[in-house]
Length: 461
Image 1: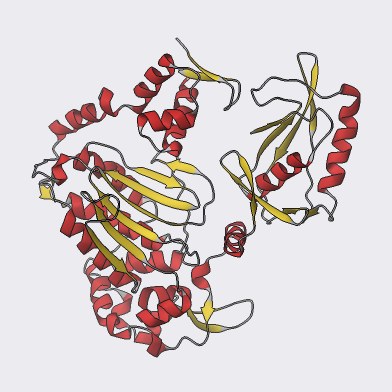
Image 2: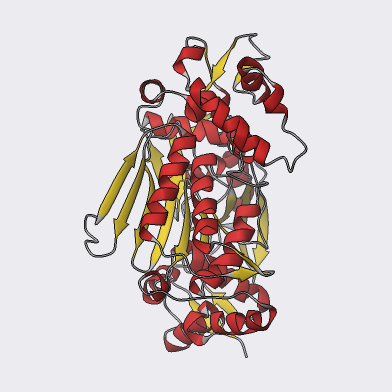
């Protein structure tokens, strides 16, 4: 939501905001309203002309490319006139006066870097970049020597029913896994980016995706640099194995029973984090992916083709495949489960591992944060039985780990704090704070009066 004063008519900053909303996730613009939410109004007799001029501008190809149809509405509030413009996210990338704008937090930002513009087109057009064909990549450019091992792994996942890969030739397997495909528009055939990332030789991968790397870091003592580091630039199968080994090396595995069977909490959690960062990464981006283990948390982050900015929870999760070919391959060999299971598993098992929930932050950079506790520096044992479930839940909901209660206390102390200030004081990610604020508003516990800049919080009794 954006407020614009527009005392002297509609100025360029309104159109810049329209452009950025179109290019991101949409939004609402109110003309005749101050930053603090005070309705100043626009001249009533000029409102109709302002609407006509606005429609004329956004329909003018010399100003907006491509043009857009928007329908502003004139509103009345306490005897004053304002104009509301609802902007839906567009399937196109728009420019205003030949400049592309993007919405970053509350700012309209000019986008000039070709890589950023390319990512906007990828996001808008929902292109699966893993399907891009490379006609000059040949079978000898792939690690065909890995296929016998991968067949065995797939067979082990078939529960004795036999996996189709076991009966296929190498060529049939590659086609069945959609690593060798046909562009149904051009008729072009060849190995695609998914094939290169999953099975490509190291030099071939770096020829095609030169910025590709996963940086594994341990930062417990030397937090400015690192205590241990591994730079991984190999195929996704071996990348997964090396990242898992890095986790095994630096994370303790607590004793844990579920249904009288021992399970490795460390393996479950690192498996979900690592599989996620490899399967759902946008490989055309130059952003360097990371797997970082710190004293009080570990996290993965990678470039992402975001459909929204949101903190993901099991309640609001809407699984969207980013690289379905790579995801399917990982499921066949047992390195991943069905789409969306990673969120549920991490929320379930993180409580037993550290007593806290993980964070899933969806944006242009996707991030998973899993808290760590003293158990990763001192051996502890944990047993999952029905009787202990209630005690774990109560521990997690204690005052120390209850963000909603902490937010409430902070508001009571200073109702004029911004969300950014609250996030800093509570040591929370800004997106995480927004998630809890939204929940508290929906419950009717708190209310915001005014704008983000000049408003205040009210605790409802």
